Image 1 (cartoon, rainbow, N blue to C red):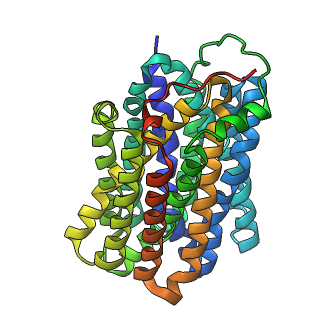
Image 2 (cartoon, one colour):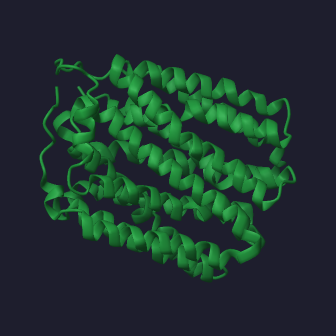
Length: 390
């Protein structure tokens, strides 16, 4: 039987943490008195950890098969490492805390995605119905924390984040192990993994996943500060972040039908084109609430549709024994792109301004759309899962 609610509960807790990080981490660093450049660097550190941690943990998960143990230990040590933030808040100490806790945090999701897909088996189209609860968790945090920070000082922020991290760990204890699979020869075969990477369009996909996250750099790093500078209240900013995720949930509810009607190539390219439109709107029209509402509704495409299509692409491109490494490579390239986007945004925010900072993100999304349109074969969407390499 599919442990629907236990899988969904974990996604709820995991993305509840992201709901506290994405809109409010930069605001907390600004509260501590750091400049835009230092904020960009601190926000980039967890993303840089996505370039290292997922591959290491993905390799370990494929070797041992103990994906659930990695998820649980990763969640526990994420919380333990984060407690150091209560000791000091100088730049070097915060940089170390950001690196250490995110090293364990980024061990969690790629392994859990593989666990979820193993539980789903032939029902992989139901993935979005489980993943949508992560979006609900994100909404709960951005609305709740936005209202809390209107009443209380930002000094309470680290305590709330620690509570959510502990919630992730406790949710991981309720999740059952994935169904056992029949041994398929040697677990790790570098030649087999590289052969799968050389399939038409696969390397282009991973490159464009990185560019997509690069384009999100200004959004995740400075949107809250941008909107606060334009006069929006923290409560309204939280609601605007939540609106994007509500749109994402609505898409998840119909994603099975969307996947049946459109190819993965169409979904990925369309998501990138809409991302370019979204970043231009946020850079040029954020002082108009109506434009903000439209731009945030496009989160359904720029994150929701792109992510689900990407997960299905990886599932169909890598066999079951190499799923962990495939998911880890996706997380790594996304992390590298996100880190570079955050660093770029930090250094350009004061010199170029909001419009040009977001415009460069839009250009990155356009380039990625062109690359995927040219390199991704239409037949990839209908390809069966690749054979196992022993």
